[in-house]
Amino acid sequence: MNVQGKIAIVTGASRGLGAALSAVLASKGCRVYGLARHAEKLELIQKETGDNFVPVVMDISNKEQLAAWVTKTFRDGHLPAILINNAGAGYFTKIDELTFDHWQEMINTNLNGTFFCTSLLVPLMKKKNDYCHIINIGSILGKTTRAEGAAYSATKYAIQGFSESLCKELRSYKIKVTCVNPGSMETHFFRDSGIQAHANMLQPHDMAILITQLIETPDNLLVDEITMRPLWAQAPPQ
Image 1 (cartoon, one colour):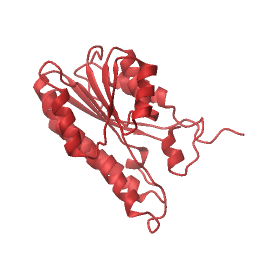
Image 2 (cartoon, helix red, strand yellow):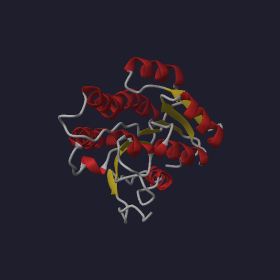
Image 3 (cartoon, helix red, strand yellow):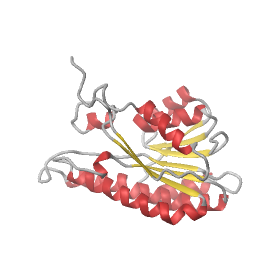
């Protein structure tokens, strides 16, 4: 797909991988609707990225709010070709110490938000009758596990299955589905989860370039799943 002139939706766009994806796609002439809950951060990204980035203050776990925005924004002649389900929440702790609120946040963001965005936007992609692409950001922890990560892994294993089934469902409509499974990435996600990020983790800008290249593959070439890890996982010496 040539992304120039295409319309993309990126969730979790206010920081980390979502911000990097928005910047790379916008630099290639893609019209990017960046969804996140933090208006100030979105406005800053727009200043840095330019007019191709459209900030949208949105809680993707609120289906009614999301549906109203989709109805208001898109119409024949202005339909999305790219959806990147990137927004995610993660908390890592012993299962008997995990709060229900943190469990619910992971379910609402990682699963419900992905379902709401996808189910609302797929009908519009079908109307385009042209090649489209859905990228679901999974995790290495959707293919393996770690201690004190049972709840997060549960959501990312679900994204793996969701993506695989959706790929089979939508390929006949010219809609590609790719599940991207990154290893550890240097973002605020880890800081919020009590894990110390460092420079040897995957870099958001590098990941954004790779994901954009997946979207730009020839129309009849489908990469349905890809897993990436840092070559050197250890933190650099202080």
